[in-house]
Length: 335
Length: 274
Ligand SMILES: Nc1ncnc2c1ncn2[C@@H]1O[C@H](COP(=O)(O)OP(=O)(O)OP(=O)(O)O)[C@@H](O)[C@H]1O
Ligand SMILES: [Mg+2]
Image (cartoon, each protein chain N blue to C red):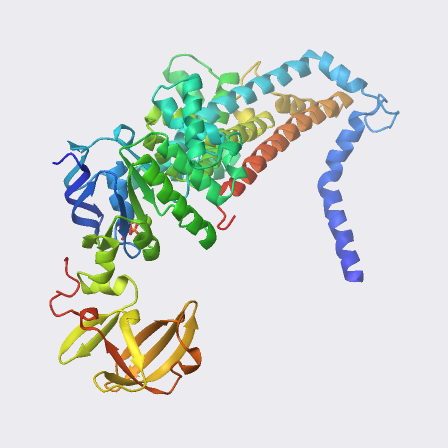
């Protein structure tokens, strides 16, 4: 194992009665990276995280943290820490005591302990709330405290299970930026579970797309978006049109399609709906051979009076590299 | 409108029916006269007389001792049971669960008789003769009240979820450290409330105590009952009011403790967008 690997899963399988939650997972997590686990509900993201944290033990396979096999090692002996979706702050302790809890277990005492805890609170920009109880904080503040409580341990890997899932959109966006800042500041490896693909694509160095306990694709956000390895990924990440032409199926992103009133060499059809969605103009086109295709254009620089209207005949074209042939993919395969 | 007033009057009547006897006892405990039912002016002298009478104070002390000991033991056993039950495998948990509920729904008189037979037999087998006394009252009370505590603590424990404990393990605390620093403090209000309830149930218990008490082990409710055979004396009214006061105080305290922790918990749940 190279020095740059923090966590390695080799053929890890976890079953709950008759459900296979994680199915022969192979995954190498690099030192210092921001890795997201992305996938639909029930695909095994949380279970993967809990296996790494030590809350669950694998039925098969090996799990290495920092090059050491951690089979049978309880959570309190692993060099990883978790930020829970429900925050899990200790209700009877102050914010400062919550943050200092892990240091206390390590035997750190007195002024040293308090100083480190205060530094961690400063890192998440909450030094003024040290004496409050968790119930006196907002959700976003509670999640920052939970983050400080885990970061103060300076773990090799920080595991975050949908840490922003319970927050509203505005606070979530704020904390996304904050998390990214903190991660580059402390340089700790982040393994981040989310089912919000925008979040995953925006924040991660690499994304793992999971489906029914397996990895569909592992790659940079750009790779996963521009070159989905399987039909599942193409469908799950962003919007995708699956267009049949000349006996083959192609995956084409809505924003890569141009729409025009005339033009010969394209796919002809009729606009079913046309609507404004924030910064974009979105058209649903029914082609002459009965397929429905979604087209998205940026409104900026678009003459909206001249935009296609419902019922109009249009022609769709796209660049050759925008159409990914899906014939090479085994449908629902493992990539 | 008339219907509403009639309903109000009916409610008042029901309450009168329920509470009038208690009110009468309380009022006449402050009766200055010698005759129980002739009002002779306000006085607290019967409380003084009751507290001077060893045939009242001794049972009163007995009751307090049994109730307090019962509360402590029931708390320990009940909490242990509440923590163990959710972690057990179903084949063990279900019968134990049933047992807990059984102790709560068994008619007290049946329980009292069974306890009496049990203690008499046990005394014979052990060759100790009669072992009936305060200890047997205590044991019988603990059987019932440990179940009460277990139910209350368990509801809280299940509501707490396992994430708090997992967070503690995650931060490097072992099982014992986690129990001491996280689980127990989080459950403390429920344990305390359960203990206070156990105290009141034991303090004013009559039926079970009646069966398993022995010579020289009278509790206050037993003492009051036996004196009724010679008619009600104002001293007994005063003693009854003291039972009422102690019991009410414990119940109100239990209610306050539970309500406070309940509020804390509700506010502690994450509210999206706050
Ligand atoms: N403790 C458990 N007992 C039984 N089945 C479980 C348990 N934990 C998870 N599972 C099952 O394992 C599968 C994967 O669950 P997991 O929680 O890992 O999914 P997830 O990807 O985190 O989903 P979500 O996005 O909804 O959180 C699911 O089918 C789930 O029902
Ligand atoms: Mg999950």
